[in-house]
Length: 303
Image (cartoon, rainbow, N blue to C red; front, side):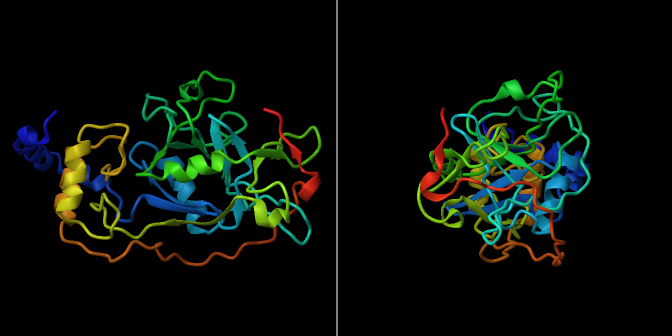
């Protein structure tokens, strides 16, 4: 579809269906993961997956992901985090404080995108057990979609933006190690930046996950809404696999996103930064598991 041919029709449709713009959240739905290997941005899909997105933002805005680490890496499949923080003093990996589990939302092409490369979804142990742990798909894992699976299937609720997958791939390229030395599978595939040294120095830490304070129509994430953002929208118009210009988070770049760009044109928030949120004190978490084999004695995980 050529954007210019259909622009008058899109404008008319947007005026008639202005309620679509109400689905756009006042705050940005782009979050930034800052890790030991660099940062990457993820656009969330609140229109498609409102419960899952709100759950993720609850953890983000309470800073509960800050100080966690990537605790699972399966090459070609996923990297996973959001569950544990490393305590160097006690050499333990206490779980982060959890909110109550949420109910599953339909995904996998039913009401949202499939688990394709670059999408983010939440880990769980069975139906309606989603809490804090997230994973990013390294490959096209549509086998995870089906709600008929014993675990109820996994719903993708966002997508990594731009060249962010280069950071994700760099994490995935690290060798995974078995750190618990037991039959437990919690820490049997932890990616490390080196096979030697203090564990705290070689884990892939997630130092910060924050909502970016950017205008809703800022598609190139430079803090302002201008013609450059319209160019992004025109290039990706109709796409369900590129999320840069998906302003309302419905999984597709369409006329509603153009209306949001139009309504926010000229806004300039300055260089993108994390949105300010009220600090939430963290109660101490009980130790869930101890990481037993450290440093030179790390056992390389068999693939």
